[in-house]
Each structure stands twice: as structure tokens, then as C-alpha cells.
Length: 254
Image 1 (cartoon, rainbow, N blue to C red):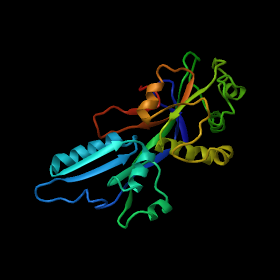
Image 2: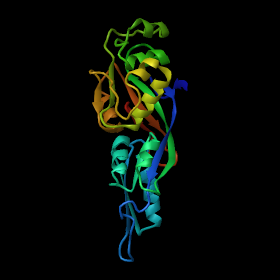
Image 3: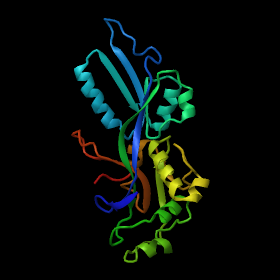
């Protein structure tokens, strides 16, 4: 895991995370067709790769007008749930299905790595006189609520030149089952024994009672511009093959 800076006032922790698409063929008859009907496929899942998937779908549909594909970006957790319930033809998740989950599916299901992204931590703390630095130990303890003030001595020690305020750290995170959450929790479990034996890994984890929560990456991002003194989880995505600007989830766009 590398650290560095991107954009204005944003320090990031690089952890490349694969986004998976799980699909099954003719799962509930949706792919059956006649000469007078279209092939119709339905999918649901992660919000992070949704712009890329929708661009792929649009390009495919333009070349194959007899095929209709719909993808709903409802979050990784819900996408996995719908796929396991066989209510969609394909699901997308930033966390791969387990062997146990795959064993419950009908023969023909496939797990396909589709793309990758970067999990970042971002903050909204104006007027501190520089860029904030966070060590692994410190940001793990922030999420564990062992550090709950911006001027905590451990934060000040690694940011000696900054004017850190005596303000509570508010955490913003996903309310729904999220692959972003899964990826960050998986990293925290790898670097912090306390996290591993506490909240652990999952699409939903306990961020503590004072965490602000919203649905979807866009919902988390919407919390940020008017909320200072915040630290939040996010996906930073770059879809170089599209005309859409880089998407930042969980922080103001820069």
C-alpha cells in the first residue's frame, strides 16, 4: 500500500481493488428469445464500476440492437443478494463471492474480474495550514474511535506544523451494503489486529454511533461539501476510456 497526494488537500492510501462481475447463463429464462423478441438481460450491483459498465452496455447495444441489457447500481451487497436469489442474470461486487456462495448457484455461474479501482481516505478540514498526513496506525484508530479529536497528540505528532483544531472527527460512510466498505474493512483488518478482531470485514460494518451514513457513493459524496472536520471512505475512479470526468465518491470533486 502506497501513500501520496492527489488533488487539493487530499491524502490517499492506495489499495488496488478488483471489481467482479458474477454471471450465469439462462439463469431464469431472461436470455431466451424468439425471432420477434429481444434478448433481455438484467444485472445489479456495485456503484463504483457502474459508469464503466453502462458505457460498455451502451456500446454493445449500439452494435447489437436485438439485445437489451439493464444494470442497476444498487451497491455490491444488494447485487450479491439479488444474484444469489436468481432475480438477475448478473451481479457486480467489489468483493468476490465466497466458495460457499458459489456452491449454492446453479452450474454455469462464472466469477469474472472486470475492472479495478483505488480506495482512498479523504478529509474536509479547512484552515489547518497544510496537508494532513495519516499513518496506518492512526487512521485505523480513528475508525475504531480510539482517536476522536483532530488535535489528538498522535495526529499532532505526525503533523507538527499544522494547526489542528479541537474538534470531533466525524466519519461519513455507506449506509447500504457496499463493496467500498468491504475493500476498506479488508485493508483495516490487514493492518490492525484490533479492527480484525472487532468490526472485521463485510459489506456493512460498525463505524460507531456518530458516523454519518448515506446510500451509494454519490450519497456519501453529497454529505461532504457542507460538513467540515470529516474523514470518510471513498473510491477514486478514473475511467480514461470515457468522456465522463473522474468520479470521486465520498468527497468533493476536485
